[in-house]
Amino acid sequence: MKKFTNVTDIGNLQAALKEAMEVKKNPFAHQHLGKNKTIILLFFNSSLRTRLSSQKAAMNLGMNVMVLDINQGAWKLETEHGVVMDGDKPEHILEAIPVIGSYCDMIGVRSFAQFTNRDEDYQEKVIQQFIELSGVPVISLESSAGHPLQAFADVITIEEHKSVKRPKVVLTWAPHPRVLPQAVANSFSQWTQAAGYDVVITHPKGYELAPEYVGNARVEYDQEKAFEGADFVYAKNWSAYHDYGKILSEDRSWTVDEAKMALTNNAHFMHCLPVRRNMIVSDAVIEGPRSLVIPEAANRVVSAQVVMKRILESL
Ligand code: CP
Image (tube, rainbow, N blue to C red):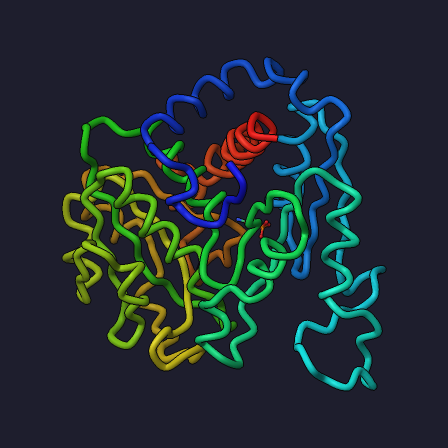
């Protein structure tokens, strides 16, 4: 594997899920692969789970790990080509990327949407430059339009907890006070469809995801109707894709609570975290016996480890 930015990079998803279960059962079985190999984890944005789970996965594989927070201790990076660099960014990404690449065997990058230009965000400009210029394999730690390590962990979690072969999986929008990207929702839709689940997306009108991420999922604007018979409910906020980056609704009636969950087939509740309690989900639901938010976060080590292992095997 030379890069991991999309569901297509994982190849056969069923084979990857089988490998994930093996890695989870025996996490230290491949320590020889990472001996004298180094990964650099670069964060343009904050993180708790991605940072720690990626470090843990790399350590499980015997790798050396370096973590760098761009904007906090490193020079601010200019990402635009052709600009006169007389502002507050003393280093250009065109030099920084190959320099970073010369220090390691693979790079993980987190770079969120900027919300100034939708096309540029969806072209994944920053991560694409790392792929083109670093000379080493690149792993997305969440980019403008996708969060594939999260979605892989989500599917692993569903596989571990499903009681029917093809569960009904509902991705529901929920309110949030800030502008959030579509990345988690995009990848969740993409990966759960690749896994063959019955996927329903529910949100207020105006929050339609990009068509390439909606794929063959059913869109249902009535949240209660969408929840009927659900085996898994995955809550997430995202800002508008079409009216790009706008908050069109703060309707608190979309918060996932016990009354909504009672409409489901005793569904498990999922969220990628961090979560705004009593905005996205009630305390009772997230603390309840069907909540999977902690095992889901724990599986972030597994998804990262499968990806890093495959890259190490291809070096
Ligand atoms: N779910 C997730 O990516 O968490 P962090 O933003 O804390 O890494």
